[in-house]
Amino acid sequence: MNNEASGTKLYLIGMPGSGKTTLGRTLAVHFGLPFLDLDAAIVAQAGQPIPAIFQQYGEAHFRRLEAEVLRTVVARPGPLVLATGGGTPCFHDNLTVLNTNGFTVWLDVPEPVLAARLAATAETSSRPLLAATGPTAMWLRETLGARSEFYGRARLRYAAATEPVSVLIAQLRTAGFALSDR
Image (cartoon, rainbow, N blue to C red; front, side):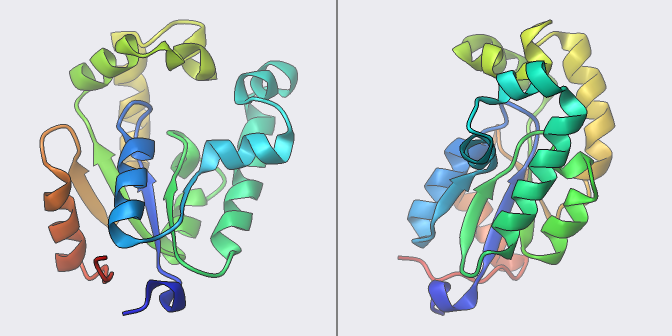
């Protein structure tokens, strides 16, 4: 199967710190597909970093911009591996857009692992919803609880903290996501 001709799109969803960008790059290389991080596309379109968007315009504006950029990305012809933002599937019917136009994978990572990953990175300040409080157990529990309803509607659930990428690749094939390996 020629990936360029197929237009196949793979969308990774999950909490901040679940590894969407890292895994997305790995899968893109493995399958010979382009990779895009939705947050980077938002920054490119807005001309300013996400924390600045939140500070200047608020979360509601950011979520509208995120939905607009997502729809632009999804409408592009050709294949793609896309790492979404943690909240992307939860607003403006974005999950329906993702599920209708490609194959969604939830990178399911337990709270303690997310907390450790987020605490170990210097990225917290670049994540507006974490910047004020940090990756607290309460924030993670509440946010994961609220978002799991959306994440659970992905076509595939991958235990990203415990399973190797080879397991995900096998799961993708079993689930009918056909790609040619390089």
